[in-house]
Length: 367
Image (cartoon, rainbow, N blue to C red; front, side, top):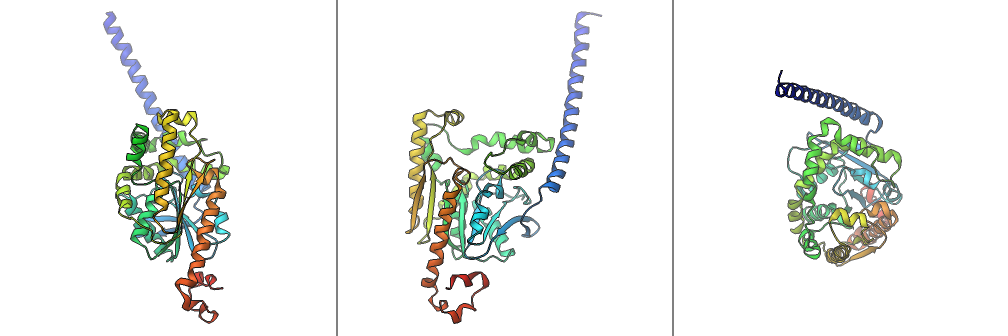
């Protein structure tokens, strides 16, 4: 046998061995993922109710009593309702507070159609209607949910009484932050990774990567729940990332909040060296980013005649993790303002004799 023939035979053996190992890994990963999904359903069931909105179910977690109802809208990612873990119960101590998971995130069913701000608003409206929640609402939106709640307010203005925006995205941020820093800041930079993880969800790779990487500020059980559903939630997050530009267009169509009480929380903790490296920015570019971010939020606060910006100097983008007290205080202020507005807007219902005509959730407004 010639050397070339021996080489080809060994190369074939090596290739077959590698193929067998790959097949074994895929089978192992598939079993790992199947067991992981079964364990997630058994160990981390939804805390709230599953609301049918016409063939799909949305997870809605409402706690507390009183009006207005606070709606917590999470940012882009796989956390959903878990993102509000550190503030949900505290908010529910003074008014009814509902967090929910958007389509394909955590416990909510995925959807086959595009996902962007307008469709998010439609889903939320359908969910609240099916759950018997008609308003008034105080919308609390983090990050990309800033444009989501802005769009909801434009589409369903009679329901929205006030807003809190937690380090929100804005329609002009990509162009203006890019100009300020000289780099591409569009979130679709992560698109390839998101799509790859979504495509590999059946192999257990996203689940393996998510294990042990939860936010350290979350209670262990909450972090474990988020990780348990990461491999399925990544598809919902990817759909929202794909719809980012349309979401910004949807939000741009809404140009005013009227005189609704509005607080815009702006995270201004300087970028760490590690964060700057990940973003591909110098320290000087990072400072320009933060300055432009603050200006964008100041403009968002001016959408309402009763809007204001609150700087949070020691918080990163997830203010609800770093400074949950600031989020709670902002929501409490807006809720109090909405309640104080009620006698002015509805003087005929202020007298005690008329109190009984109010729906139960509004009777607490009449003192």
